[in-house]
Length: 229
Image (cartoon, rainbow, N blue to C red):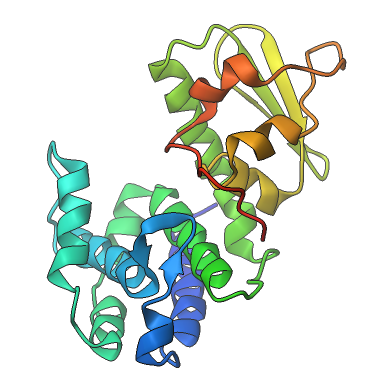
């Protein structure tokens, strides 16, 4: 995957989000986003726009990443949606994507695309190029989480003939799922109850108890209620 591909997929994802939010009336734009319960659709748009604006201008988050994110939302809280959309289109974040070569920004907007779809009761493009590309970025994020949390075994994931072994040590947990589901599972878009219901396996193929793994697999806190998309 080249940086140019990442840029084109970011642009395509941005366009899909804008197509959905630009036509919303004020009431619909203020719908709560179940996957991000502290945010409305407007807030979610402000989040992706604020990150793009800062990174496009070379402003990095520093030590307080959460404060940086919260500031993006607060600064655009009452801005008209069309102004936020224009800001996002003109943020110039493509240069940052090309320079970093990282898929993490694409992963973020892809996740929020489907968060917004869920809030609107719609089904987004779950077979987009971005969904498939983001599996690599998701794997890298999971690898960092497992390392930071001291996991002593690896996780093996598979989807449509592709496999990823993530982490250090012998494989201790396996899961096969569709690409979109893998993104939602490891993007903390499934509740603990939903996580426990998945077909986890041990390395020998027997059913696995995911319970001890749940703290290791959570990048963000799990939703309190099931997210059914």
